[in-house]
Image (cartoon, rainbow, N blue to C red):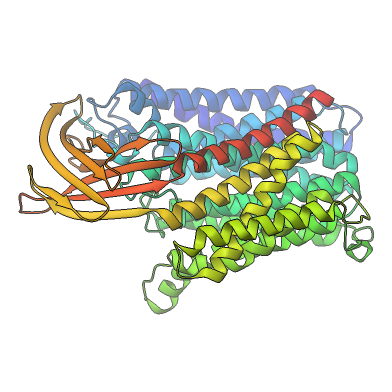
Length: 626
């Protein structure tokens, strides 16, 4: 109980220091020759208090202090120590405390790292960031306090949802939040710069590293979430257009668009309106994601809460921030220099703008697909789910020109350009089309659309591959990121076209056989771990070429909470994954067996890592140049 008391008072003191910082910032803004040293001291103290509060919650989980309601609801004495610690942020209250921790860390880093910026700009950025921080302090203390007490003290906790007890998901939220919360600094910074009318090439170079760092963490966070969904949920896929998956994808699309706008702004003082709106949108989408997940209005395995009061608080807070940012945009932003009519059709900035339009279209599709079922439910009490067919029909046709422009755009020069190397560009296009026809002809009924789609993906792949040999390290970060994206699209397409699935019910000792696959259910065995019992099935799978795989999926029966989960067994090679999962058929001796062959799965993960490496190299290069 001592840890909970310390943690709670640390939150209250942190809120108090936030109000003090607000006052000191307003005072320093009027006398802005030098940054008041008290501001740095109080910012550090605020961060330190949130660290103490967070560590108190961690210790409460580690020692299984069930006098703490959050620990009682999300932990158990038999849980491994790693998952006790991960349980700190594997729930609503703890995850919001993690949000607050990253918010206070980022503003401290910002103040320390921006000594070469004007005092007014630094102080005003702190003011906007403190508005967000104070809002989160109030939200935590009033509606989501992680240090509420229970009396009498229970002897045992309810435990954490077993599907959340996984290494990838344990580290997924902190990394994802670094991406989400990184957008708060971009948001605060752009509001400060707009208010002071200092959005310029120099400012673009300064904010670029924050955009990059946020984008890198968000990309890696989405990757970890996809890997977890692939092997833990037993569906055999990496992306299901689940509403909460979409919630992380939307700010990534906005952030990617913002990153490209910042690149243009560095070269030429244009697209300032784009930069401001995208900065606001990225943070608003991150906050919206928090609202959708925390309010409980989304039906997903990822959601944590079902409390309308919490959702209402976040919604009011979000609308207040959006209203404030739009007020600043319309009243302080000067649009005279933001003249899009000066663009030359064949130029790098024009290619970026066109691709930005496509990115905004993709974002709109995902946004509508995510929130339309919610509005329909509210207005007509009809419950529907928007699945993959909706997204595929609306996104795939526009993906084709997007990939083609992405391939040609980097070949163009800034301001004005002529398309050079026309012969090799046309040659690669012809090769891409011929290769696609050969691949698609024997595997797909929809020959035209699939041929064009794979051709455009191959075209981007070949051009980015050639750039490695032509340009060396001149644009290495961009080349790696674009090459990774082309590899991602190709891997996803091949994975969709060539995947096979076999679903059957088998008893121990039985065999299933068709023209492509033979599955022999050999036996089952049992083992007991600290907090679950495991039933392990042994299968021998033989394909049409006679290759044999030994696979052993599991069923786990957790003791607290009492839940049965399916654990897939996956044999991974460079070319494909052999994926098998079992489930119990109720009141029968049969097991439901799902066996899938998933081509190029490894390359999907590698491609996203390459995209992230491109961002990391760009960030390191920027830091090195400083």
